[in-house]
Image (tube, rainbow over all chains, first blue to last red; front, side, top):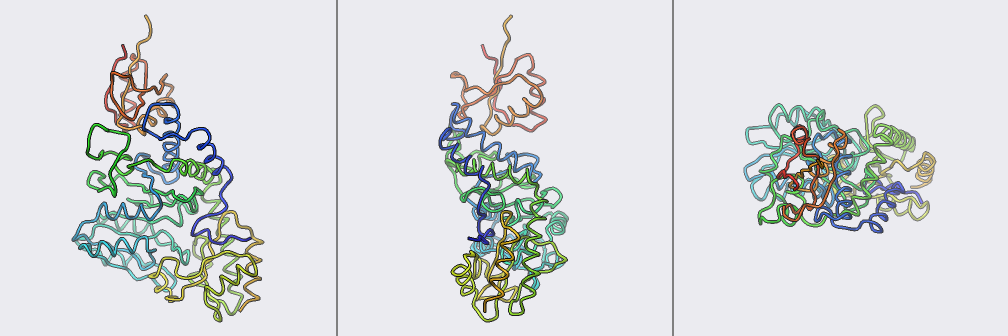
Length: 380
Length: 75
């Protein structure tokens, strides 16, 4: 079996991820921060250590500003719905996933105004196109770090500078890049960093988070949910301090125990090493696909940085026919269709049929790419 | 004279753990203990420290931006 769906969730995970989860179930199991007993403290330490390592990974000075969520989608909803008011203007790109588009469209009905900057047919964003849409009511710029369809990176540091100059908040959806491409919230000028725990951070599904930068006033940010936090129980109002303000209810401690080992793995390997390896795989794939005349690939350039996600089509077959053929005859698992990003597909000209997407990962091998290229060569 | 200890209470366990980590890094003789019954903090843990190091310990917390809820001398 060849797994090329790492953009949806990474698999396999480093073995220590599962081992840590089993160890939590066997030896800890308690509710973190709810009591002073030994096991509760051990559970709380798992959350704490994970925050500390994530803070190191993303260059966050104060790890209490890292909020755990169920997934990147919840983080995006929390940030957008927590901070945007009717009358506020938001700028986003045409390459966004529905995790950004749907909450923004929902907020639009409540009076938030939205500008969607069109990207090129290669999925690239021109920072000038963002800047010229800024006006006095603009509150936030929301961008994906890398497209989940084409793997194209958006110019985050450039937009970060523009956001700072205009005193706007900058939200970056790093679902596809956290762990596989360097992120420094200070250098990149990011105020709200959304990450997925189960993709390139190698945690289990059901883990994700939001970094709330120092420029965001958390007291003015509404939580999506209120409830027990293990702190300030004498009060019936939600605490105003982080991370408790946004973390009500018992967390996914077993999942975060796995995430902790995933993040440790990323730090040990080094993000740059991971990026360079994945980049070599995707380059091998893209350059091989370019040699097959009946295949069109989207957004690829050898001279650009790119994450290990690539979309392509065969002229003669629909994306889903290609994917089922690859699965049936070659046991290659990938994802056809729209990848929850209709706007991105409109941008690159592949709506409504979509594309075949290969999401490569750190555990894929050169030989798997070669095998897939041979398979595609013989199809169509 | 036996050593006197104080405890610091925090608004949540995150701050207690962060204080423990930073204090250990700096060589303080501190220990996370359950909150004594006569005090109240429902994150359940507090940090015990040698009372004679109170001033320097509070400086550390301030420098690290760690929120605390109270400081008490253990009788």
